[in-house]
Image (tube, rainbow, N blue to C red; front, side):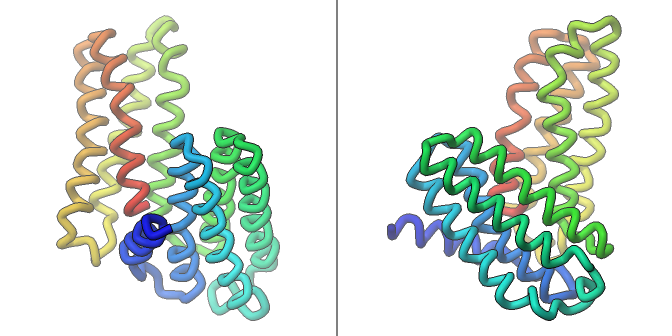
Length: 234
C-alpha cells in the first residue's frame, strides 16, 4: 500500500494547472490516476490495475460531485456535459469489472474510451491542452504500428509508410513546441520528449535508406518512449 501511495503522490505532483477554467484543471488532476490505470492494465499487473482504477473512479466521482450540478464556463453551455461525465465513470466501472475477472487487455481497451470522451468534451467547448497533442501523436503512432506490417507488403508500401511517419514526426515535434510554460525548465520533460522524437527520427531514417530489417527494429522501439512520456506528462 505504501508503494501505491508514493506512486500516486508522484503523479499528482506532476500535474500542473494548464488551463484557464476550473473544470479542465480538475479533469487534468483526475487524469493522473487514469494514466496510471492505463499503464497498469497494459503491464499484466492485476492487483495494481485494480488499485489504479479505484483511484481513477474516486477522482472522477469527486469531479462529478463538484461540477455536475453547476459547471463554470465554458462547460456551462454544454448540454452533453453531465452525460459525458457519467460516460467516463461507466468506462471506469466496466474496466474495474474486467480487471476483477483478470481480463487486463480488455480493461485496457475499455479505459482507452475514457480518453476519447474527455477529449471530445474539451473539443466541443473549444478547450485545447497539452494532452490533446499527446492524444494526436498517440492516435497516429497506433496507426503506424498497427498498419505498418501490412503496408510494407504492398506495392510502394515503403513510400506509403514514409509518408505516414512524416506525419508522426510532425506530431512528435509538437510535443516540444506546444509544451506548457511550466515545463520550460523541466529537464525530465524535455529529455522524455526528445526520446519520443528520436524514436521517430530513427524510424524515418531507416525508411529513407529503405532498410527493411532496420525499419522492423525501429518500429519496435517507437512505443516505449511514448508510454513513459505519457505516464508522467500525458
